[in-house]
Length: 233
Image (cartoon, rainbow, N blue to C red):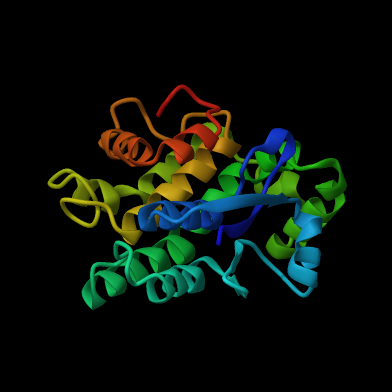
């Protein structure tokens, strides 16, 4: 049975959630067929009969599973006959550490960098919700917390990625010789930033670019569906 993936989309079908990209990578890694069901921000509560607060959400064999990390663990357990997302307990713990690092230390800088651009691209029915919810989250209007020059904000964001650069100088993937879920976490964030930002998130000589190119080359559907808004991979 085909899995249904409910994911967030902006205008023109731009996919805009790092967590949804992570699940796309996980499904591709497992070799599982899936159908994309794009939704707007304000459409999320109606998913699967109502009650959902966030995406991604998947429907898999009669089960509804929400939250990217919970979905990854579900896919690992429910489709154990397929390639492992973690490569064992140590790989799971490493992926969990990478996930926590992004969500606690990098996500805020990323949000500050791209929120103004996402606001320009949200679906019309989402504009009021997006503006008001982000102002409530940050305690100030979007215009205030995105007031710093774009170049300055991107420089701060680039610096948060230094730990990845340290690892990827010596090996092709964060997980070693082959990609696992830790790589999908990082690549999911970069795909989101690239789709949302008109500016280059990575400089042209960044050591992360060869890794990012390898990540996109893994799965043609992901490369095809990712929206390119700056002249990088």
